Length: 262
Image (tube, rainbow, N blue to C red; front, side):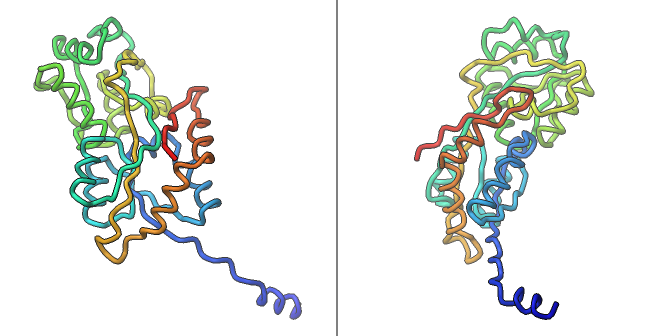
């Protein structure tokens, strides 16, 4: 036993994985994709990526403050402003999916008959049936507001219900109220509480939903793990990442499509 203990002491100690913090959208977490990617990242890059799960607006604010090493979000205009302000050296597109409009299966506003996303929202406003908004400055919320602006109809009234919460909470609220809601496709497909609800409108190019990676400027403070963020970026645009992202499915449906440039 003594000899065995001595031999174990002589074995090289395994190096501790390097830790970095990445702010990500709630849809990235809700979809289940993080549970597929993080173990592979840890095994293949020796990086322990700690996720801070928030809406896109809050994720970018964390990056601006230098409280995280990178962000993975989905609101291009806000991302480009983040880079232009010097908070990140660049923006790297990684993958995409799309937004969908879901609501009560009996579809009182007739969304299934709409020919565009703006017409679908206009039908909801005209019928004054409940619509749940994330209301949290997330990428989904920003996309929703842009669609409302395109309709020329301000979302106001008792029928419009901002919840100030993540995608899962917004979907649960919509189910409880029998309301319409804009969701990213991945969160909807991974959502378990769909009783009485259905996907009612999809396919408009205006519903395209791009996700991008932004490494935070290492010059913000000495705690920014710039080398780790760069190593993670290299992995996220690799063939290995592509196989996992494109291969991830729920109920047989692909949730994300890899589109990073190498």
